[in-house]
Length: 357
Figure 1 (cartoon, rainbow, N blue to C red):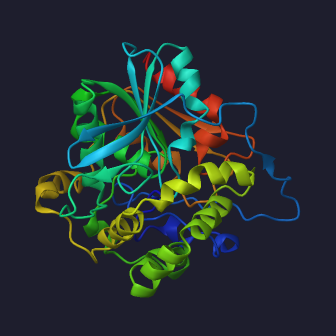
Figure 2 (cartoon, rainbow, N blue to C red; figure 1 turned 90 degrees about the horizontal axis):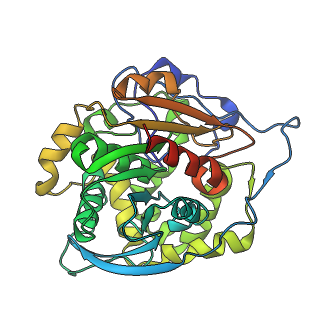
């Protein structure tokens, strides 16, 4: 999941006890000192019944393609006219392109060329060389997005994402603003740094990220490899406690985790964030810039679900990181962490709206 807290803040210390068992966000830093975290409320006897999964929409993409891009052969879904204005939709962990299976046709019907890639370590995306390091650091994943745009001769796109995909969208917008027409980001500003992540959090907040420490061990790596689908499903349930997705919905995404590099990429991502694994030298300059938590000037809409089970920052603490035209939207009705799949109409509308900013 996305990194949604900043070390040492009073808000981080006030994480709701009712969420202490929650498998929280996948990293520790959001943006800069002073950013807080808002814990999702605990479920109780008064909590409304789980919200039914979004139904009646698409369950499969019209076209699945492959293209060589940078160090990868990228698998991606495409919809809409080939000459339409491009939109790049980026998924997170542990999700896949089906986060956007109902979003894509809405955008395509509006005339957009929609590209939904499997990130490195997911689905049909593969490394071109066995010798390439299975690196999950944030700059590497963002560089993949730029390489994909280059491979598809996309000069500029609306970039939108959730979880890892939101962070990647943030980085593209911050480092390559000339390639980003506008952005939609679930949970706001998620750029992090190893230096910030070295700072300890209060115990209650640390407990939220227990699986980062699990992944830091050989036992955790082996356990994730053995129980990948079980782990993913548990994350889905806890991160979106009111999303009553069915077995078929999860089954459509589960094969993406069978990618031979999925475990290596996932483990490296979390170990890198904690400074327990090195990145690659070619990304050092990018990470140095990201560690300054650059402002994002491209037009932006940030979004949050009212039932996001993952700890997440209050929009007020990151609003100033967006210096261009900006809007935040709270999506109600029991919407959890996987907002594009749980509220596809609202997410698609945000993309359509931000493209006109």
